[in-house]
Amino acid sequence: MNFAVLTQISGILKPFAWLFGVIFNWIYELLCLIGIENIAVTLIFFTIIVKMIMLPLTVRQQRFSKLSAKMQPELSAIQEKYKGRKDEQSQRLQQMETQEVYSKYGTNPTAGCLPMLISLPIMFAMYRIIYAIPAYVGRIKDYYSVIAEAVMNKADYSTVMAELATTVGVPTAKFTEAGGFSLNHVIDIMTKFNTSTWETLLSKFNFSSAELTGIHESIDKINHTFSMGTLNILDSPKAYGLLSIAIIVPILAVVTQLGSSLLQKAQNKTTTKQNQDNPMGQSMNSMLYIMPFISGFFCYSLPLCIGIYWVISTVVSVVQQIFINIYIERSDMDAYIAKNVEKQNKRREKLGVAQGNTMSQFSKAQTRSINYDQVKQNTTASYANISGSSTKNVNKKVNTKDPVTTEDNDASQDQTTGSDNSSFAKGSLSGYANILKKN
Image (cartoon, rainbow, N blue to C red; front, top):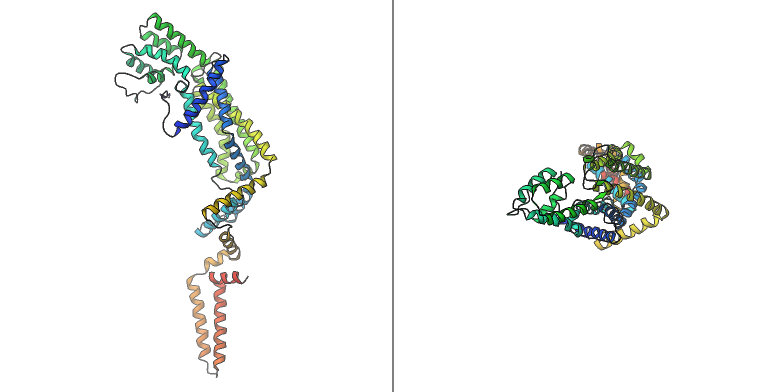
């Protein structure tokens, strides 16, 4: 379904859309100066420039992927160590040891998500611009305005435009102007017109010869601006059919996406190998092959301009990925890790967080020293039995008929107490803690 999009976007995406709209308009005007008045060409340059603007985020994402591959063996070892342990203590220790690994490399689990979260509003804003080019490119809006103003001079134009909006799939429920559609909303509807729709519009009104001259000139300029050979990039490949040359765009979308997926898989061999035994990892690997075909379906159903952007964006991403990986391979990862750790320590100092992982190390030392199954079996009842047995031994020693001196009694009590402590030490957590202190 098409959406009414001429009015510039509002909300959180507005700054991004405005900025990229300005860039798109500048590129178009510069191309017009050298005689290239074409949106398809503008879209290609626009995609390349935006991808270059996002290059720092891409580098950051690639570095995190490389760092993740380096950390993965240690993280997998921790997962294997606590495999099958579902109790709260084991889960807590696993989290602490995992966090220690991330701290060791000066990063955190969310570091890889940040570039993606930043790039999402940029991507959505770009799609908004592509769908609403007249809203951001003044010269193109002027072409549509000539036609829209001529239409709005007719008394029943709102009824006719509402019918045509239904034909081209533009919802008008939010067009709430009293007395008829606004100029922007009339252009919203016209941006979805094809050749037959323009002919229907001209047949609905009695235009003067002067009006018809201006309308035909504007339609010719619009068609030329949005043309790519014999195709109109505002139409979808689906509208041309499977045997049309337009089908090349969705095919290229599938091929380029597959190439990008295979390159990504080849560069993350360690992670891919470890994901073979991980159900979630297996699903992610499967998506590398499924998503390209989903992209191809979207490019087949949506306007050609979306497919062109998708293909060019993927090609530029693959080229960037190759050169970024070469750069990262040649760079010193150990120096990069040391720099990350230094930044992390400075942040901790500002927050007043103690350096080191003493508690984590102590907990791991306890885990290594304690027999997990033995501790689990040491119940309160067993400690009570030990205490009761020791008390009986003390009473028996004190009530003996043999003459005993005070010193003997004291020695006997010390011996008994020592035996009691020894028994307690063998079965209690505090006893293990005392052993650890002595060691």
